[in-house]
Length: 404
Image (cartoon, rainbow, N blue to C red; front, side, top):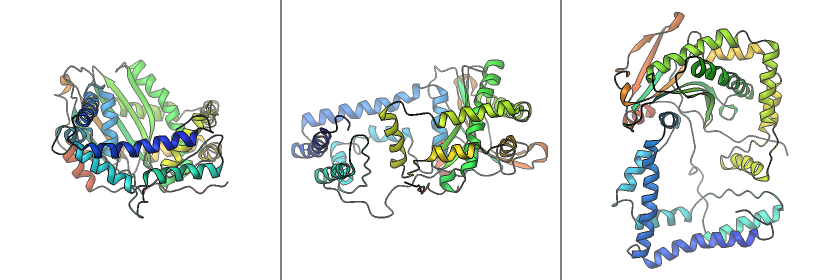
């Protein structure tokens, strides 16, 4: 809730009471009440429609989503949500009542008061919630842990699916090179900021090469993907003319070009300019109170408490050299020199590119003496879940010790 500080306690009390009261009202009327049934089905169908409309999203959006499905240690797929919402024997008003009642009886409560409020008042806000909902805390070990999958070394994992929209002419591919843990899961701040800089430099280069020069499609971008304590470099391309395996090849060719013609020849002036640009983004002042609040809340809700991250990262950033960037690229990203390259390629095929698909898992020769590099093909959610059960996970991100 937000608003005038002297009115917040009243607003919070009313919202908390209404939330609990709504559940009691539904229970009193009963799950067979026509009015309650009508409202429940209205919201069920609205949610179902939103999930089903995802099939109409652009192919690159589905590629991004599928990448998250692979990397998340434990994730439900939208199709599973749809199946549940369509099953009226399971998704019904009584089930909702039981789940909500059980969920509100025992839970963890994270609270954050920002602005014109004192510590005593913040504690009173939490007490208001406790009194309104009457919940007990979770037991130790019940809190969910968000962990990322460790991609297999010296392997290209291909997750290949057909685009669900037959009217869509574009195909898409995301190539993700996993570079290890962040400082929260056993890595270090230096590696974090090296990837920040590499992603900053690569984003312009990938767009110039793949979009402007080769004209593969309008959607081209490279970015740093961080998820549940793991990180790496991602490149996404959506194209009406090239199939996903072809896009994968173009992305690999760009990576070779980028290493030799751009990263390897970076001048001192260009290097300093990139460092300054990344530093400026990290030190940019919040323009509104809400921006600062959301930034802090993100650290709290994820249980990281890394409130001085920017200051620590800028200190590491200022100590970087060009050799650090090149060494990191060669160790983690380069197809020819990375000793344990971990690659994920996500393909979304349009109807006109279905003939150009990866057909079977097989070993392929590594480049320039890199040895055998395995290729693993996954095409269904069931196969993906089976594969992930045999893969290791990064440690759960932990708290950061910080000075007051």
